Length: 317
Image (cartoon, rainbow, N blue to C red; front, side):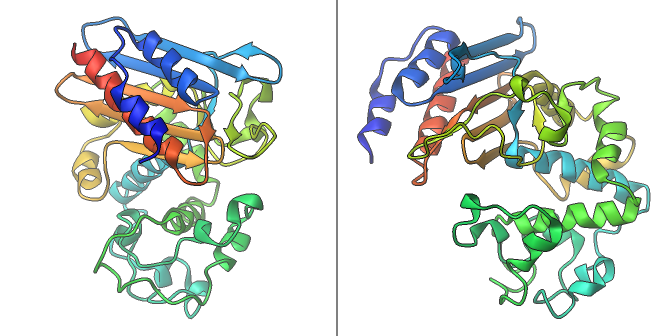
């Protein structure tokens, strides 16, 4: 185990979340944001380090941040609502929804929408392509081309493997079904009812100065201008996670569908950005943490998880 992780485990537990955020920056991270919504206690907004190291702007707990795979929770809720409305069917296949991919994706006639949402499709992960993050694909066609004609990793429904291709396909299916970009549906059905006014589909919709900088070990530049999908403030994510877990994001009949297909917490990673969002039932607390440094060996990811566990210990004490 790298000494950095050992040190993080052995350091005395701080008394406050601010001290823990400062410690995380002293250990490794360029910037940290912590948001805690605990029932019966004041909401906590914590930041440490840099919003922009180059411009010497301190970290801001209300900054926009790249959510990476936390966005899958929003996608799964949107799919649930479309299923409840009868516009999607969890048991229909890739072949049914995207017939052009038959013969290009193994088992397209057997892989169902449910399997994709649950990461049980066996489709190869397009972001595992060699050097993907050095030059990411930008369109659906470019992304799906990275795994076309590759053999399945396992038979549909027979195993589990986290795979971004599943949600690439899910988003395409929702776009086709709606006949407009599915983020508009997310906006209308999820964000607006919860008054989430600081959640966006992409960098194109925001002032870049509002976005927290992200850094990757060994890469000399700020990565904030790389567009990797949804952005939001920690508060907006926290409100969504609360609504997801208490069921208020759902209409009648939707929560049973959602519970049968996906989870209630998530984390995310893209170069420069690590994000975590979870509701801790025993504390009735939603905790959202953002860490603006990554590395190729995922040592910083493991460090993030250690710090997350220490945050929960501080809340318990």
